[in-house]
Image: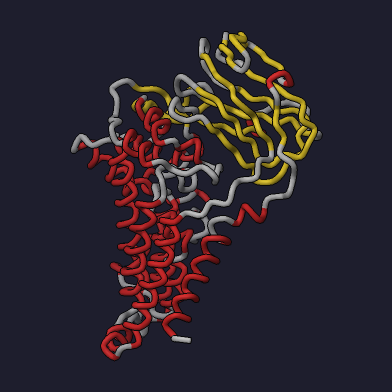
Length: 427
């Protein structure tokens, strides 16, 4: 058989494996359990008026429905029509936890243009009772169509994604063939580790920056709030009624709802919608402000948010939307990470490829291309280690000069400020 045909078949086979096991692994990994349909006559209503079968009107801002389950649950799918945006929250009562709590719940944001709301638990739970807070607003008419438990997700074959996989394989093949040529070999041999890092971090970092939806990096909600606070010159957060945060534009919450951020976080079967991106791009900072709690990020030193804050400040200076500010913050964070880490790898006298591999790991690049405070923390730690090794092992350094001492002191101060835990570890 022709070698080209065999090679083409192998590429298609590899693409199929990636599509099946990388993007549809949940289809195979979910436990095999029967789907449970909850009927309207099985639920207990609180603070709802029944207008007609399946149509309810809330009479308070805390209405809910409840059902006794007593089964192992790993997914919930609710279909309903909503007239506006509101909070949809699922509470679980387990055998060892006899009361409902925020810690044992899942929250989604409803949309009048959406009817299906799904959550997938990280691990199956033996649930005694299920309570669903359908809305957080009074006088809301909800058409509840169905509630399904343990509905196994369908196998999702995405032709566009499959084409991207094939294209990626072809690009990798072309790069491999190019590297095998003499010109490429000479070019690669002349490339230093810091040059390789510069190219790899720019390519993968840019892809991560654009392709990861807003607020989907680790704790990016809190990082955005803290960065926005610092961009306005407020370096110290305020305390209000036991919460720590600050007064930020009220439209930030509208931006979160428009982008559908809360419907995606930890709900891996939900995907970002381009229409949500378009809606979010039309939202600008409002004059009206409200207190937003972000105590988890308020403890961080302002210095680790300076790149993000500068990006947001630039966006506000040019009267850009909140979405544009968000991505400018990510971009500035990535640029600073690349610059500092490039300097660290170049300065390191030995083990350059070790630091290179660490600096381009997926999680490292993911943090660098987000609003995370860990981007600057990682970069400055790389520089700290590289500079210590440079002063220790580089033969050109006979003694530490005043300039080198103050440079080291400057790096140590930033390391100590980047996280409280590192304050004593640098000494």
